[in-house]
Structure formats: C-alpha cells, structure tokens
Image (cartoon, rainbow over all chains, first blue to last red; front, side, top):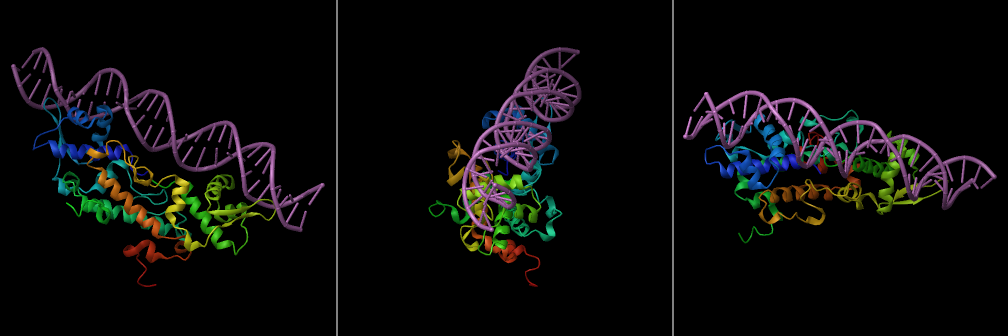
Length: 150
Length: 150
DNA sequence: ATAAATCCTACCACCGTGGTAGGAATAAGT
DNA sequence: ACTTATTCCTACCACGGTGGTAGGATTTAT
C-alpha cells in the first residue's frame, strides 16, 4: 500500500474544512468529531498541512483552520506528496524522477518509471473540488458504473 | 511505496530466467550471482513464484527453475499481486474491489477506486516479454523521451 | 556415493505506522 | 484580569512488515 492513513486522513481533513468553513475557521475538535477520528492523531497530520502552506490557522478561542486557496486550486497529488513524502510506487525511484545507481542497466526501471507517471498523471489532474462535488466521472473515468444514468 | 523488494526481485527473477533458460532449468545460485542479490533472500521469493504456478522447478543436481509459460503470457500485475499480496494503493480497498464499511458515505473512496483501476490497468497490459524486449514505448507511453529517435 | 540443487522452518534487527500524553502559548469573550 | 478554547510542540510507545540470515532435510543427476 502506497498511501497510509496520514495521506488519507489529510484528504479527509481538507474536504471537511472545505465543506464546513464558509469563510471562517474550523476547529480540529469539530473535524475529529465529524469524521470520527482521533483528535490527537489528526493534530499531527493537520500540522503538516499547515506548515506546508495548505491551510491557514488561528490560535486561541474561536480559532481553527481554513483553506489557503479555493478547492479547485488544490490537486490531490500535492496534498499526498506533502503528507506522505513521496508517491513513488517503488524505492528505486525517488522524488523528481531521480533514479537509483543501477539505473543504466536495469531492465525493469522503465516499468516503474511508467507506473510512477501514470499515478502522478491521475492524481495531479483531480482537484479537491472534484472530491467535494463527487465528480465520479473524472475520478472513475470509463470504469464508472453509474455515470451513464447520472 | 507500494511495491517492496519482494515484488521487484520477483520481476528480476522472472526476467533473468526468461533470458537465461533456453528451455532448461536455471539455478537459484546463478540468478543470485548474475543479479547480485542474496541467494537466501531470493529463495523465499522464488518459492512464492513457484507455488503460485509461475515457475516449474526441478530438485537435485542440474535442477533449478524455468518459466511455466511463454514470457508474453505473463502480465506484470499477476506477478506483483502474487508476491505482494495486493496492489491496492490504500488499505480501505482490498482485493477484488471489496470496500471498507464506511464506503457508502465516504467521499474519497471514488478517488482511491479510480487510482486502483489506473494502476491495475497499466500493469495488467504489460507483459514479461515487454520488459525483456525493452518495449519502452509501451511502458513509458507518451512520456518516453527517446521513443521518437528509436 | 557424492555433489548440487531445491525445499522447509525458524529466527532476528530495524523502521514506519498509528497512535497517546502532557503541557506551553495564544487569542477571544466576560 | 481572568477564564476558556484553541493551536502548537515535544516526547513516548506498541505493533507489524520489510529485508534479510541460518541450518538442515530432501531430492536428483552423474
């Protein structure tokens, strides 16, 4: 598995804030309660999002978090890369396409590089707004079972 | 990261056997030496491949392993699923598309399902023969930098 | 009989995952 | 000024998977 709870919860947090903000700050306690997740654990994840510039925060009473940009201006790839560190499907491919030292003679490298591209291409084209709006056609593409009826 | 050394080495083993077999059996010691990998560790991986029907084995002197089918009849997805257990990018999607219990109300599930499909679609269309033949166009697709010159 | 191989079981160090705990700093409302 | 609600920060920890290692039993060709 490539995306741990860190990345998944980060996305849950982002969508929760987007849905419940209406311009103001959303408190961590509210998010944790709504999403039924540990507030303490969420704290460590939201801290990454905040330091990474995905959120704006306000301390003290009535404080909380809100999105730094509009939902359509976040792509899923950047959120997951920030929280997970990398989305590379294998250890022999690092960030920014850097290869391992056996790369020159490795016959399987093009496979991993291709897989990496396919994954990043998919995730970078989907936005936070797509998730909030339930854009199933964009997320599931030709595999969407119900898109024809919708 | 989604594919550990288990899956990567499995693929290395399969390509090594395909290239060095010419109908006969290839010994584990030879594979380990050629690929510069621990023979003992490879043993545990090749055992999975063998039990999973990917290989045929012969014990005793002059024994070893050979492919059970032609290289073009293996797709990469099945090799990796056998060795890794699953290729699902997240824990909330299991094998065969089974979803978690919050699936009905989960707004991020279509994203993960879509990602899962994209990955499986890519890996199931590439064969062992493609890797051996260095079919960069198929593996790297539009991202292949050198395909135009080839 | 011997050598060369697969096969089988057991063991282990390390690190990432998925948390928990406690308190310090800050801001708003009274 | 005080209280309350909130973020922020540091430290800690159990568990399981990864990436091996070790030793021997079994099988087959020569």
